[in-house]
Amino acid sequence: MSVRRSSKSVSSQVSFGSRRRISTSSRVVTNGFESSGFGYGNLGYDVFSKSLTSGYEVPLYSNEKQTMQNLNDRLAFYLEKVYSMEKANSKLDLQIQTFYENKSPMQSKDMSSYFKTISDLRTQILSRFVQNSELRLKLDNTRMAAADFQIKYETEKNLRMIVEADLPRLRGVMGEIKLSIADLENHHTGLTEELLYLKKTHEEDLHMLRAKQSGSVNVEIDSATRSDLGQMLKELRSQYETLVEKNRREVEQWYQTKVEMWRTQVSSSRTDINTSQTEFTEIKRTVQSLDIELQGLITLKQQLEQSLVEVRERYSAKLGQLQIYIDNLQEERQRLNTDIQEQATEYQLLLDIRMRLETEIAEYRRLLGGEEHTTVISTSKASMVKTETVTTTEIKEEIEDVHNPHLQRRVKVIVEEMIDGQVVSTSVDENVQDIN
Image (cartoon, rainbow, N blue to C red; front, side, top):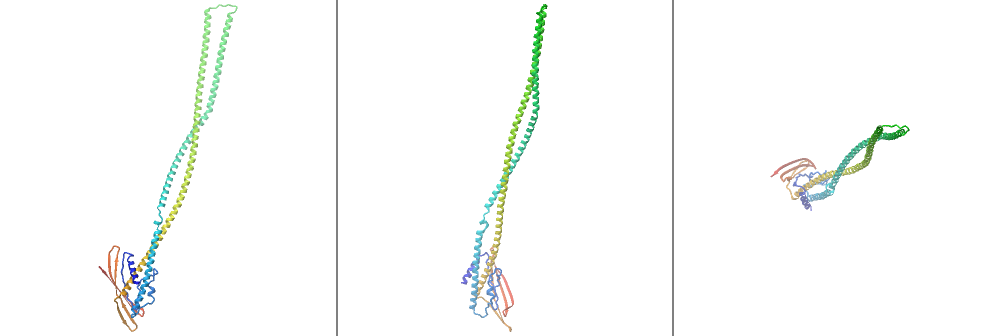
């Protein structure tokens, strides 16, 4: 059974790496078997200390069969340890592989969706910034337009105040015109009455003259003189009538001119007042609509700013959570790398232990197959000293990763002299020879 396990160990050892070592060691034993000198204290695998420090010694002339049985038992114990280490190693390999498959950040957590979400959110935030800039520009334009309308409103208001201030003067002028018209009408009435009075006086004068002519005294006058007097009266009447008509026409023309002039001024003033009132009404309506639009834009701006603040807070919290998650993943990755390095170190140590155990197995096989050894026995008066020298040829073959085979022949001779169970002297002779 031990031989089968040994062959299994050797075959599995070859599959662990690209470097193969076949090594044997030699020992010089006096009054028993010495430990192989492999230290496993760092891993806690004190495989050889229990069996080699128990004072197990083989006498020089003991039964060879019993010695081989003890060696076989030790070999079985070593093989059991190797088998258990192989099982533990395979279990660790399976656990590491399962851990990588289940807990790997690149496989279990795909961060591309988060990155895509973050990119979309950044795009939305940039679009929001652009919209806010456009709204600010529109708001500034609206404020400038409102300022222009305010200036126009102030100008029209000043014009209206000027017109309203000029209205009392125009009303006074209109009153003066009305008084002038009344005076002219009174003057026309007086002239008409004067004309009637002159006509009446003229008729009375005619009647008086006629009455004088029709009196008792008959005065004969020249007919030519009478005709001249009538002609003179006619001329005088025509002159007066012409003068009165001329004065009347001049007064009427002056009156009509003044009335038309003042009517034109009043009409133009009324037109200007109506136009100013219409423009004032339109400007007031425009200002009110602009105020309403401005209030709406201010409200929309405040809502957008509030939404932007909420979006920033929400996505800042999400980014913080993602950063914490990424930090946790990085810490977990570092911890996994540390665990993997520790397990790799432990695995390498186990592999070294296995190689050394296989070396021991090869040594035991060599011992079972027989070896040539020289025994030197020396006696003295104090005690019996036995010195056994074992010469072993170690052939070491290394296959590097670059496929450059290198063979060495190493011969190591260790001679120890023991007196009464104590090592008196030790000598080591090592010879290394390259084999081409």
